[in-house]
Image (cartoon, rainbow, N blue to C red):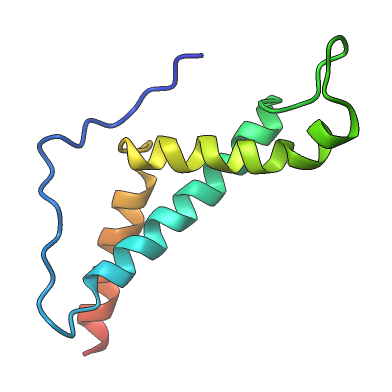
Length: 98
């Protein structure tokens, strides 16, 4: 399955100043993107039990963990850009609140 991944090689990693909340905002944005992607992957049937050679009850119970791990891996590789948009909006909002 080919999922377009945002290229993050050129994006510098955040180096926060002490007391800076940008890291927390970035983590929150990435967690939201991972949650969104997990739901999209579930809706697409990723991790759904197969009709033949399935893992039975165990596979059904742990399929959601695999889907969440796939979503987290997509976000780790740059995601679909949702975390960037959310992060920018959160930073802008936090500056406006000051």
